[in-house]
Image 1 (cartoon, rainbow, N blue to C red):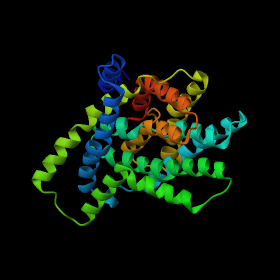
Image 2 (tube, one colour):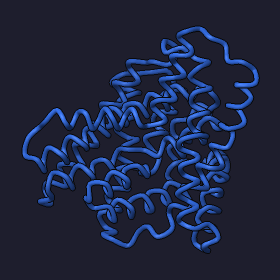
Image 3 (spheres, one colour):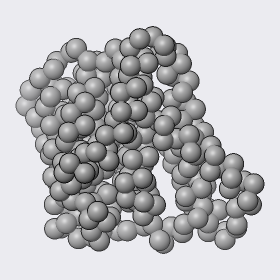
Image 4 (cartoon, rainbow, N blue to C red):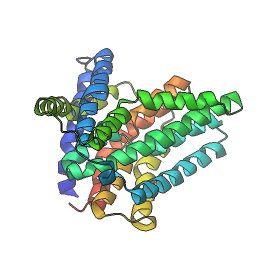
Length: 309
Protein backbone atom coordinates (compact mmCIF):
# COMPACT_ATOMS: atom_id res chain seq x y z
CA UNK A 1 0.00 0.00 0.00
CA UNK A 2 2.77 2.46 0.96
CA UNK A 3 4.67 1.73 -2.28
CA UNK A 4 1.54 2.30 -4.41
CA UNK A 5 0.77 5.49 -2.49
CA UNK A 6 4.28 6.81 -3.12
CA UNK A 7 3.99 5.96 -6.83
CA UNK A 8 0.68 7.79 -7.20
CA UNK A 9 1.70 10.74 -5.01
CA UNK A 10 3.66 12.58 -7.76
CA UNK A 11 0.54 12.65 -9.96
CA UNK A 12 -1.50 14.25 -7.19
CA UNK A 13 1.42 16.59 -6.45
CA UNK A 14 1.14 17.99 -9.99
CA UNK A 15 -2.61 18.37 -9.45
CA UNK A 16 -1.83 20.21 -6.20
CA UNK A 17 0.62 22.47 -8.01
CA UNK A 18 -2.06 23.33 -10.55
CA UNK A 19 -4.50 24.08 -7.73
CA UNK A 20 -1.93 26.33 -6.04
CA UNK A 21 -1.30 28.19 -9.29
CA UNK A 22 -5.03 28.74 -9.76
CA UNK A 23 -5.66 29.63 -6.14
CA UNK A 24 -2.97 32.33 -6.16
CA UNK A 25 -4.30 33.64 -9.50
CA UNK A 26 -0.89 33.00 -11.08
CA UNK A 27 -2.93 30.83 -13.42
CA UNK A 28 -6.23 32.52 -14.23
CA UNK A 29 -9.51 30.81 -15.08
CA UNK A 30 -9.00 31.85 -18.71
CA UNK A 31 -5.51 30.30 -18.74
CA UNK A 32 -6.92 27.09 -17.27
CA UNK A 33 -9.59 26.95 -19.97
CA UNK A 34 -6.99 27.30 -22.72
CA UNK A 35 -4.67 24.73 -21.14
CA UNK A 36 -7.59 22.31 -20.90
CA UNK A 37 -8.37 22.87 -24.58
CA UNK A 38 -4.75 22.26 -25.54
CA UNK A 39 -4.61 18.99 -23.61
CA UNK A 40 -8.05 17.80 -24.74
CA UNK A 41 -7.81 18.64 -28.43
CA UNK A 42 -4.08 18.28 -29.09
CA UNK A 43 -1.90 16.49 -26.51
CA UNK A 44 -4.29 13.69 -25.49
CA UNK A 45 -5.43 13.25 -29.08
CA UNK A 46 -1.84 12.85 -30.27
CA UNK A 47 -1.14 10.30 -27.52
CA UNK A 48 -4.29 8.28 -28.26
CA UNK A 49 -3.83 8.34 -32.03
CA UNK A 50 -0.22 7.20 -31.78
CA UNK A 51 -1.04 4.30 -29.47
CA UNK A 52 -4.14 3.21 -31.42
CA UNK A 53 -2.28 3.40 -34.75
CA UNK A 54 0.27 0.92 -33.41
CA UNK A 55 -2.42 -1.53 -32.26
CA UNK A 56 -5.20 -3.43 -33.97
CA UNK A 57 -8.81 -3.42 -32.78
CA UNK A 58 -8.61 -7.21 -32.41
CA UNK A 59 -5.76 -6.78 -29.93
CA UNK A 60 -7.69 -4.24 -27.86
CA UNK A 61 -11.34 -5.34 -27.95
CA UNK A 62 -12.27 -7.65 -25.09
CA UNK A 63 -15.97 -8.56 -24.89
CA UNK A 64 -15.86 -9.94 -21.30
CA UNK A 65 -14.11 -6.75 -20.18
CA UNK A 66 -16.78 -4.56 -21.77
CA UNK A 67 -19.61 -6.69 -20.34
CA UNK A 68 -18.07 -6.84 -16.86
CA UNK A 69 -17.44 -3.10 -16.76
CA UNK A 70 -20.89 -2.35 -18.18
CA UNK A 71 -22.64 -4.59 -15.63
CA UNK A 72 -20.78 -3.12 -12.66
CA UNK A 73 -21.24 0.45 -13.83
CA UNK A 74 -24.93 -0.08 -14.62
CA UNK A 75 -25.53 -1.47 -11.12
CA UNK A 76 -24.10 1.66 -9.47
CA UNK A 77 -25.96 3.87 -11.96
CA UNK A 78 -29.24 2.22 -10.94
CA UNK A 79 -28.44 2.57 -7.22
CA UNK A 80 -27.60 6.28 -7.54
CA UNK A 81 -30.71 6.89 -9.65
CA UNK A 82 -32.96 5.04 -7.19
CA UNK A 83 -31.60 7.02 -4.22
CA UNK A 84 -32.15 10.28 -6.11
CA UNK A 85 -35.72 9.37 -7.03
CA UNK A 86 -36.45 8.31 -3.44
CA UNK A 87 -35.41 11.84 -2.44
CA UNK A 88 -38.09 13.04 -4.87
CA UNK A 89 -35.66 14.59 -7.35
CA UNK A 90 -36.75 14.99 -10.95
CA UNK A 91 -35.45 12.69 -13.67
CA UNK A 92 -32.93 15.20 -15.01
CA UNK A 93 -31.29 15.79 -11.61
CA UNK A 94 -31.32 12.06 -10.87
CA UNK A 95 -29.54 11.45 -14.19
CA UNK A 96 -26.85 14.01 -13.34
CA UNK A 97 -26.26 12.46 -9.91
CA UNK A 98 -26.05 8.98 -11.45
CA UNK A 99 -23.52 10.32 -13.95
CA UNK A 100 -21.38 11.60 -11.06
CA UNK A 101 -21.53 8.14 -9.49
CA UNK A 102 -20.06 6.29 -12.48
CA UNK A 103 -18.12 8.55 -14.88
CA UNK A 104 -14.39 8.46 -14.13
CA UNK A 105 -11.76 11.04 -14.94
CA UNK A 106 -10.05 8.46 -17.15
CA UNK A 107 -8.99 10.85 -19.92
CA UNK A 108 -7.13 13.47 -17.90
CA UNK A 109 -6.07 11.37 -14.89
CA UNK A 110 -6.44 7.66 -15.64
CA UNK A 111 -4.64 7.46 -18.97
CA UNK A 112 -1.51 9.40 -17.93
CA UNK A 113 -1.30 7.68 -14.54
CA UNK A 114 -1.96 4.10 -15.61
CA UNK A 115 0.36 4.22 -18.61
CA UNK A 116 3.18 4.95 -16.17
CA UNK A 117 2.00 2.62 -13.38
CA UNK A 118 0.95 -0.38 -15.52
CA UNK A 119 2.74 0.28 -18.82
CA UNK A 120 1.29 0.39 -22.34
CA UNK A 121 -0.76 -2.75 -21.62
CA UNK A 122 -3.12 -0.45 -19.70
CA UNK A 123 -4.07 1.51 -22.81
CA UNK A 124 -6.52 -1.00 -24.28
CA UNK A 125 -8.59 -1.51 -21.10
CA UNK A 126 -8.72 2.23 -20.37
CA UNK A 127 -9.80 3.00 -23.95
CA UNK A 128 -12.58 0.40 -23.74
CA UNK A 129 -13.93 1.82 -20.46
CA UNK A 130 -13.69 5.31 -21.92
CA UNK A 131 -15.67 4.19 -24.98
CA UNK A 132 -18.40 2.65 -22.77
CA UNK A 133 -18.61 5.85 -20.70
CA UNK A 134 -18.85 8.12 -23.74
CA UNK A 135 -21.05 5.97 -25.98
CA UNK A 136 -23.42 4.45 -23.40
CA UNK A 137 -23.65 6.66 -20.34
CA UNK A 138 -22.95 10.08 -21.89
CA UNK A 139 -25.66 9.24 -24.41
CA UNK A 140 -28.01 8.06 -21.67
CA UNK A 141 -27.85 11.33 -19.73
CA UNK A 142 -28.73 13.31 -22.87
CA UNK A 143 -31.68 10.99 -23.53
CA UNK A 144 -32.97 11.22 -19.95
CA UNK A 145 -32.62 14.99 -19.59
CA UNK A 146 -33.98 15.86 -23.02
CA UNK A 147 -36.73 13.24 -22.88
CA UNK A 148 -37.89 14.34 -19.42
CA UNK A 149 -38.10 17.95 -20.55
CA UNK A 150 -39.85 17.29 -23.85
CA UNK A 151 -42.07 14.55 -22.42
CA UNK A 152 -41.23 12.30 -25.36
CA UNK A 153 -38.39 10.83 -27.39
CA UNK A 154 -37.44 12.31 -30.75
CA UNK A 155 -34.89 11.67 -33.47
CA UNK A 156 -33.33 15.01 -32.63
CA UNK A 157 -31.97 13.50 -29.41
CA UNK A 158 -30.01 10.93 -31.38
CA UNK A 159 -28.68 13.60 -33.74
CA UNK A 160 -27.44 15.50 -30.68
CA UNK A 161 -25.76 12.34 -29.33
CA UNK A 162 -24.14 11.54 -32.67
CA UNK A 163 -22.85 15.08 -33.09
CA UNK A 164 -21.44 15.02 -29.57
CA UNK A 165 -19.54 11.79 -30.23
CA UNK A 166 -18.17 13.06 -33.54
CA UNK A 167 -16.97 16.28 -31.90
CA UNK A 168 -15.23 14.42 -29.07
CA UNK A 169 -11.50 14.41 -29.92
CA UNK A 170 -10.77 11.33 -27.80
CA UNK A 171 -13.29 9.21 -29.68
CA UNK A 172 -12.14 10.59 -33.03
CA UNK A 173 -8.40 10.14 -32.34
CA UNK A 174 -8.91 6.55 -31.18
CA UNK A 175 -11.08 5.79 -34.22
CA UNK A 176 -8.60 7.43 -36.59
CA UNK A 177 -5.74 5.50 -35.00
CA UNK A 178 -7.49 2.16 -35.41
CA UNK A 179 -8.40 3.06 -39.01
CA UNK A 180 -4.73 3.83 -39.70
CA UNK A 181 -3.78 0.50 -38.12
CA UNK A 182 -6.40 -1.37 -40.16
CA UNK A 183 -4.89 0.03 -43.36
CA UNK A 184 -1.55 -1.40 -42.19
CA UNK A 185 0.19 1.91 -42.84
CA UNK A 186 3.47 2.71 -41.07
CA UNK A 187 3.74 6.03 -39.29
CA UNK A 188 6.57 8.03 -40.90
CA UNK A 189 9.37 8.68 -38.43
CA UNK A 190 9.00 12.52 -38.43
CA UNK A 191 5.24 12.12 -37.81
CA UNK A 192 5.86 9.60 -35.05
CA UNK A 193 8.33 11.99 -33.37
CA UNK A 194 5.83 14.83 -33.71
CA UNK A 195 3.11 12.74 -32.05
CA UNK A 196 5.54 11.59 -29.35
CA UNK A 197 6.54 15.16 -28.47
CA UNK A 198 2.99 16.50 -28.53
CA UNK A 199 1.56 13.50 -26.67
CA UNK A 200 4.27 13.86 -24.04
CA UNK A 201 2.61 17.08 -22.92
CA UNK A 202 -0.60 15.21 -22.08
CA UNK A 203 0.45 13.89 -18.67
CA UNK A 204 1.75 17.08 -16.97
CA UNK A 205 -0.70 19.30 -18.83
CA UNK A 206 -3.76 17.21 -17.92
CA UNK A 207 -2.80 16.88 -14.26
CA UNK A 208 -1.99 20.60 -13.92
CA UNK A 209 -5.28 21.50 -15.62
CA UNK A 210 -7.23 19.26 -13.21
CA UNK A 211 -5.72 21.08 -10.24
CA UNK A 212 -6.26 24.56 -11.64
CA UNK A 213 -9.86 23.73 -12.54
CA UNK A 214 -10.63 22.71 -8.93
CA UNK A 215 -10.30 26.33 -7.76
CA UNK A 216 -13.73 27.76 -6.93
CA UNK A 217 -15.45 24.39 -6.78
CA UNK A 218 -17.38 23.14 -3.78
CA UNK A 219 -19.61 24.59 -1.11
CA UNK A 220 -23.07 23.29 -1.99
CA UNK A 221 -24.83 20.20 -0.62
CA UNK A 222 -21.78 18.63 0.98
CA UNK A 223 -23.75 15.61 2.20
CA UNK A 224 -24.94 14.85 -1.34
CA UNK A 225 -21.43 15.34 -2.73
CA UNK A 226 -20.18 12.96 -0.03
CA UNK A 227 -22.72 10.33 -1.08
CA UNK A 228 -21.82 10.71 -4.76
CA UNK A 229 -18.10 10.53 -3.94
CA UNK A 230 -18.75 7.33 -1.96
CA UNK A 231 -20.56 5.88 -4.98
CA UNK A 232 -17.72 6.84 -7.30
CA UNK A 233 -14.72 5.89 -5.17
CA UNK A 234 -16.08 2.85 -3.29
CA UNK A 235 -19.26 1.38 -4.81
CA UNK A 236 -18.17 1.78 -8.43
CA UNK A 237 -14.82 -0.06 -8.18
CA UNK A 238 -16.43 -2.72 -5.95
CA UNK A 239 -19.22 -3.37 -8.46
CA UNK A 240 -16.82 -3.38 -11.42
CA UNK A 241 -14.56 -5.81 -9.53
CA UNK A 242 -17.49 -8.20 -9.26
CA UNK A 243 -18.12 -7.72 -12.99
CA UNK A 244 -14.58 -8.40 -14.23
CA UNK A 245 -13.40 -10.85 -11.56
CA UNK A 246 -16.52 -12.98 -11.01
CA UNK A 247 -19.23 -12.48 -13.64
CA UNK A 248 -16.98 -12.06 -16.70
CA UNK A 249 -13.44 -12.97 -15.58
CA UNK A 250 -10.56 -11.37 -17.49
CA UNK A 251 -6.77 -11.47 -17.12
CA UNK A 252 -5.37 -10.03 -13.86
CA UNK A 253 -3.64 -6.99 -15.38
CA UNK A 254 -6.69 -5.89 -17.40
CA UNK A 255 -8.91 -6.46 -14.36
CA UNK A 256 -6.61 -4.32 -12.22
CA UNK A 257 -6.66 -1.49 -14.76
CA UNK A 258 -10.44 -1.59 -15.16
CA UNK A 259 -11.13 -1.63 -11.42
CA UNK A 260 -8.57 1.15 -10.87
CA UNK A 261 -10.29 3.16 -13.61
CA UNK A 262 -13.60 2.78 -11.79
CA UNK A 263 -11.88 4.08 -8.63
CA UNK A 264 -10.94 7.40 -10.26
CA UNK A 265 -12.73 10.60 -9.17
CA UNK A 266 -15.67 12.19 -10.98
CA UNK A 267 -14.84 13.43 -14.47
CA UNK A 268 -14.91 17.10 -15.35
CA UNK A 269 -17.10 16.54 -18.40
CA UNK A 270 -20.02 15.72 -16.06
CA UNK A 271 -19.86 19.34 -14.88
CA UNK A 272 -19.86 20.56 -18.49
CA UNK A 273 -23.02 18.54 -19.20
CA UNK A 274 -24.70 19.74 -16.00
CA UNK A 275 -23.82 23.34 -16.79
CA UNK A 276 -24.95 23.00 -20.41
CA UNK A 277 -28.39 21.70 -19.39
CA UNK A 278 -28.64 23.85 -16.26
CA UNK A 279 -29.08 20.86 -13.93
CA UNK A 280 -27.33 21.03 -10.51
CA UNK A 281 -23.91 22.21 -11.78
CA UNK A 282 -22.76 23.35 -8.32
CA UNK A 283 -23.61 19.96 -6.85
CA UNK A 284 -21.52 18.29 -9.54
CA UNK A 285 -18.68 20.75 -8.98
CA UNK A 286 -18.60 19.92 -5.26
CA UNK A 287 -18.62 16.18 -5.99
CA UNK A 288 -15.66 16.61 -8.38
CA UNK A 289 -13.66 18.48 -5.74
CA UNK A 290 -14.53 16.10 -2.90
CA UNK A 291 -13.91 12.91 -4.91
CA UNK A 292 -10.60 14.22 -6.29
CA UNK A 293 -9.28 15.08 -2.83
CA UNK A 294 -10.50 11.79 -1.31
CA UNK A 295 -9.01 9.76 -4.17
CA UNK A 296 -5.50 10.69 -2.98
CA UNK A 297 -6.10 8.01 -0.33
CA UNK A 298 -8.76 5.75 -1.86
CA UNK A 299 -7.15 5.25 -5.29
CA UNK A 300 -3.86 3.82 -3.95
CA UNK A 301 -5.91 1.55 -1.67
CA UNK A 302 -7.86 0.15 -4.62
CA UNK A 303 -4.77 -0.18 -6.81
CA UNK A 304 -2.89 -2.03 -4.06
CA UNK A 305 -5.90 -4.33 -3.62
CA UNK A 306 -6.22 -5.34 -7.28
CA UNK A 307 -2.78 -4.66 -8.71
CA UNK A 308 -0.58 -7.53 -9.95
CA UNK A 309 2.43 -5.15 -9.68
